[in-house]
Image (tube, rainbow over all chains, first blue to last red):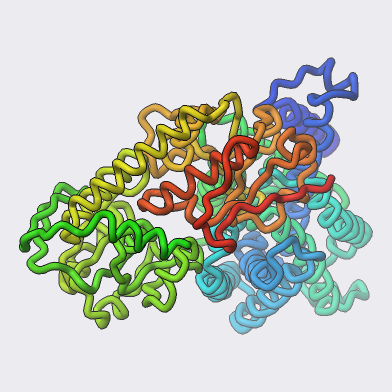
Length: 324
Length: 312
């Protein structure tokens, strides 16, 4: 498919999911009430549903961008914040900060970013020893994730009065997120996203091997490190606000590449389309979670993990990206 | 004050002599034989410690709930052995504690019955509903050799509940809310303390959940649902860490605007012990109808409900 119709289709889906999300919930809201702008219905949409939907949208977009950047930085199709330990590191950082300052830490994103950096660097250091192959990256990411999950578990167990709070945050989701959460989130994601777009030509060059990249005047090592750092920020910020959301970073760039012709797979096209797809996935998961007629619906993080896990298996099996 | 109440109770209802061994059928349906009058009783729930305190018996050890012991029992719980968190008691401490009876909960402790029974006779009780409370108090009373005292505690509670029922003005809606970060849960009517509301002429808009296990009768709440319900009184558990302040929906609630949001003590989370049962009912009566009922005088200050101010 050509890029423009695919992008238009994705944008249509994202807007459709946003509208569905804003009109789904416990309180029946009519379009006329929303547009009228006053009363409880307008308040529910403006102050409760809209910030939550925007947190879901921005988180999905940022995670998708992060996945695309990691895949480019390590030239590996299995690059994903979850699979490379970044999400687990961010989760450990946030869990530690929550245990130290349980009442709404002033900057919940920063500890997440620090944890994400540490985990990402560890994964890269381990995987680099075996040439950053798909298998070495995923094994190193697994080991680092297990380590940081253990750190998270220890912190959770040591803070019994916060165990449930930390448990529900670690499931991942957007329930009851507020404008405050959105304001913590958007600057990191917008800044990271714009930077990623600005260096799109460099990212195209990084998909080549380092020798070729050097031939066109790039310091490939330095750029890969910068792109990796950008990916960590884009993954850690939504993790800090919404908890760990798996597979969006892996699936979105993958599915986007499948949608468009090989000739159109330049980062200036791939990044915004991946972001749109990521936003659509998280919005859709959040809306389905709310629409389920259950007393305790699974949060969006759980739904994405189930569907994303199945899609991951399907994609890796078909593409042969992993052969054990 | 609580100690005075216990002394009065002990004097007015002396423990009837009961021959041992006694056999009690617990909530697993298991017959448990207690060979001798127990003197070192380990309480794996606050309700069991509460029962011991109500009978004026020493508490060997008690588990904690979210890191805290049964503060509402006052001096009765001072200096007792910390047996760990209620859902994962420390078996090593228990094994070295010289316990001669272990009172646990079916849901959390029955799966480890073999380990407990290696230490001492183990009785598993449901301890979730008002009906459980009455039955479990009788079972514990029998195991402790004080069946008549247990019956007296139930009768006294029934009488107190009747007094409150007759005097309660009624017409108030109440939601019991747990806040774990942004995740909010509210009680259905299937378990304590929501079961107290009909006694007090109040209603829980979430109602009774048919077919639900009482232990799971919670609903995950979105803030817009709470806004739609708009209860007159909001009872919040000590779990919340200020999240209610961050959510603009709360400032619009009638309960918030009328200053009727209360953070309550941990006795509300395990309200099936004889002391907690009475204290919670009496304090709820006061919170719902402050002009009609006084708060329970023997409730320690640290366990009393506190009004929460939510500033938009």
